[in-house]
Amino acid sequence: MSGVHVTTTINGDEVDFVCPADETLLDALRNRLGLTGAKEGCGTGDCGACSVILDGRLVCSCLVLGAEAQGRKIETIEGMADGEKLHPLQRLFISHAALQCGICTPGFLIAAKNLLEMNPDPTEEEIRFGLAGNLCRCTGYDKIVRAVQAAAKEMRGA
Image 1 (cartoon, rainbow, N blue to C red):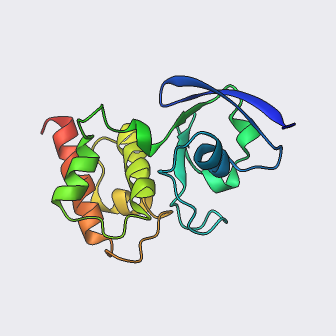
Image 2 (spheres, one colour):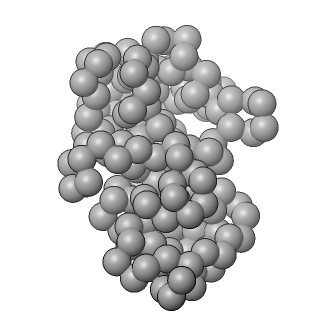
C-alpha cells in the first residue's frame, strides 16, 4: 500500500504505521492499530466520542489526519488504566453510574483526564465547560460531573 509512513508515540509506546494521506487519525487508530476505544459518533467534531489527547491538547481524532500524528504524542483511552488497575476516573465513572451505552464514555474519560491534568481542582462550572465538547444521549450529565468531582478530590488526596 502506498501512503504516508508515520512514526508516533501512543500511550507511551513508539508506533509506526502507513496510512493514506487523507485518512483520519480516528480511522488510523481503529483500523490500522486496533485501538478501538475512540468511537466515531458524528465524523464532524461535534460529539467528542473520538476524543484523544494530542501533545497535551484534547482533540477530536475525526478532525485530525493520521499523517499529522508524525512525531507527536497521543494518549487514548487504552492507555488510561495501569494494567488491571483502573484510573480513578474510570473507577469512579463506574461507581457513580456515569455511563450507559458506552459510546461517549471513552471521550468523556479522556476529556476529564485532560481537564484534571490542567486543573486539578475544578469547580462544577469548570467541569461542565471542560466537558462541553462531549455529548451523551443516555445518562444526562449530572452523574458524569459528580464522577469527575469525586476523581478530582481523590487524585488531589483531599
